[in-house]
Length: 206
Image (cartoon, rainbow, N blue to C red; front, side):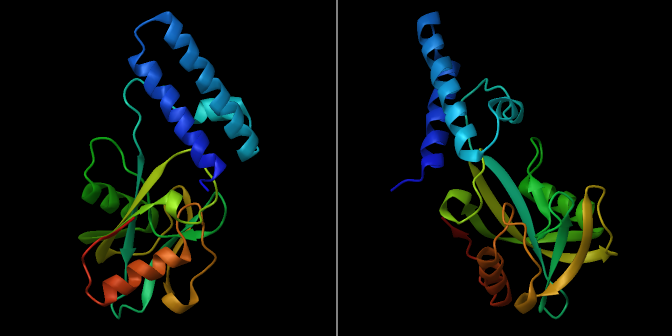
């Protein structure tokens, strides 16, 4: 059975698409009603307000697509530890990364995120995985997200917290800290770590 939140996201996407391509007021009004219903349902499932959801979603002016999150797997020199950044929002840890900005390649985005969050200058080496968040047990969220994990090499810099982060450090793969599961899961870290240490650079994808 498809989870309710996934169905609501599809309903919202249909409404957004309809509003982009509607050619008359009659259809526009119907799609606006469907959009409002989808937001009301999403607010109930997510225990939030419709106003908060409206503030989170940018106005749709063209065909709605998936959001892209880029994450870096940076290993210590002996490949036994993983570089992680601590989120200020929840105090938990994640692979360095964030939303890919328009105008950035994935390579540029991941280099920027690693430097901003940890103080490390990274060199991208290989795309290890593309995760569809829907296919993994992340906490529910309103956006539909693909998560790209890129293997990177630390080439210079010293560990320091980024302006919006609460820490940065290396951790043994067998002793990872409490993870910010909205951003990364232990199973995902273990999967990309295994690929990296075994030299398996054929990207996993859902």
